[in-house]
Image (tube, rainbow, N blue to C red; front, side, top):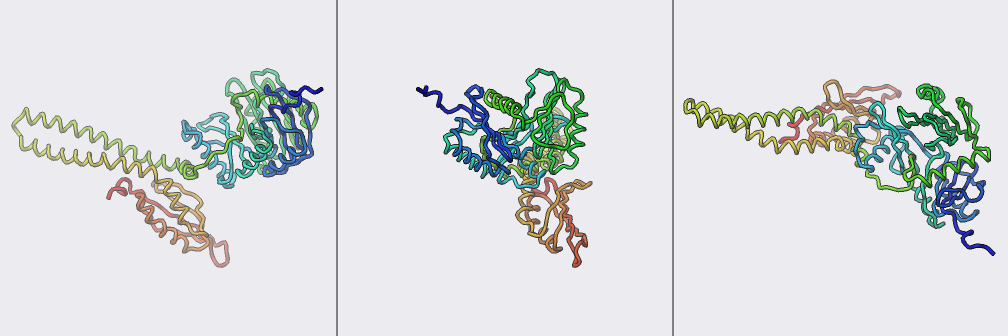
Length: 459
């Protein structure tokens, strides 16, 4: 006779998916393993293949646990840095979009179809570092559909690297760990002085990763405990106190048990778990990307506005004093009246400015995004905008390359009206033939925008 509850589904299933095999462990609601580690010859070469791997696993094995956690060895994972002043106190959605924008700049890949999860790591030298994991939105949706059909809930998807605890389980005031994965090196450290930090090196795209890893170890200094995780054959691995080879049965069982215990029993795991899909507002992405430019523009007008406010207060004080002098001294009435009229005119002008200034400041705050939107809408097909910066005279300089010289004039003509409405005066564009082709071209060009300040907004 079988006891009914012995056939009940596990509370959790942890799947470790690689290019060759898939490892699975089931645990109870406390993260304690139930049964043995099962190994399937289900391979997954890219993240896009995770849904198919899950379908094969569901059809060929016992029912998965009620909540499923996925570790995928080739998941896109990066360590990104943003200026702390730019992200301090911002909402989670805006921070996520800023990280997507930074990822696009780093990798050159579009963020429109990417789903991201992030985890704050540390702040140093006025820069905040974030560990991010990314997956295609379409792939994430298909994973959810497969698990829903299997009556499972997704606990989260993450890279198997970066478990933020000691694998050896020993207590140590300071420690470091090096992890070798198919195309990525993880380097983690923790000590009482600087706290927890990490580095992620991509071995396929970075030829100097070994030198960078050596420098990281030197900068970390001496620690009480060091360890390494070896996933497959590698050319280089620094010496550590202990090493865990995941191709050995005992090591991989122990390591998977640590992962399941951490994921199940930690209320807020210190790693980027992909488990929620958010709607991304691309306008905010590009607005935040131009935040630095907006900050410069606002700062340049801050002093002017402050002066106007102080002048307004000073003139009001002078007006009050003049009115008292008129009452107390009858001599020189005509002179005082003349001064009073002058002060009243200035007060009227300042009162008018007090209404214009907020409207102008609101327009100035929208300039960076409007600049980017105008360029993206009106740039011809064979013209590339490479950078937007400032020259020594604080003018905005737009540089790029065009396959045809007339396209530069076409761009200038298309955006002139938009830039004029934003308070910018555009100089005649300059072009330089790079003479890369026999028939001439491409042409490098500069568009200089001169800021007319408040006068550009007041008709």
